[in-house]
Amino acid sequence: MKIYTNQINESWIIDRVISEWNENNKDISTKKIKESDIVWIISNWTWEKIPKKYLKKNKVVASIYHIDFDKFDKKEEQNFKKMDQYVDFYHVISKKTKEQLEQLTNKEVFSIPFWINQENLFYIEEKLALRKKYGYLENEFIVGSFQRDTEGNDLVSPKLIKGPDIFLEVVKNLNKSKNLKVLLAGTRRQYIIRNLEKLGISYKYYEMVNINTLNEFYNILDLYIVSSRIEGGPQAIIECATTKTPIISTDVGVASEILHSDSIYTLENFENAKPMVEYAYKKSIEFKIPKGMEKFREMFKYLYES
Image (cartoon, rainbow, N blue to C red; front, top):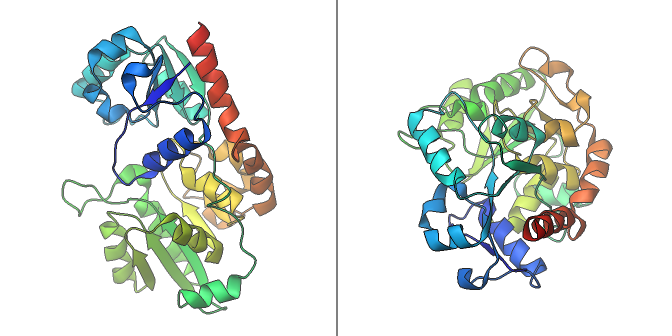
């Protein structure tokens, strides 16, 4: 059995996932599609770049990360149906997306969150030295958000499925009682930055950081906030869990599968949300490499033998 994953080269998390998969599964991976038995469409938005002869000849599994039914228009539906005719099985990273996807296809859907590489993301004891490295004081309350929040077509409008308006409401409330500092990373943060400046809330912004810096960022936070309305993961939930970063989240993606119910909030009750660090950390252990890849290998074996 040989598995080929389509490449995207977008300097995004999926590039990291592909690299880690190939490195840790050399016995069943190939970078040459003509040698493969299974095509893994890991970036479904680029599936049309794959030669159709291999989609017809090979077994095909496609990963779907989230579905925004508010934007699922006729064009989206046609694109999905076009891909669906080649797909044998689907993979999603949360049970919520599985429920969505089953409304669109009768193909079998596997829900398996992505693994975490514990060599790159881990808990660091020396918090004070780390905070000092990035210019933070011990008495400052650092809130983190490492994702996009602004639409790419105008770099002004909020990307509402990511809930930047919700994030701002939460930090505005925290700013009343804490010496608040916001740490942002990732591209397209214009909407949050503009509004933090209007609110007079101090922030630092790093557009793109490497995995070592990302790990250090998690380890200096007092709180990470997921404020999305729709998500596939996000992977930040598992990353916070494994680095023992306090986190609260809206009830999206894998949140209810990893976090304690006390850590999940709505806009109406976010003041009562409590990070349950040890609970999340224990949940994250099963996703560490190599254990976190075992269910993927089982899925591919099932597909190959079916």
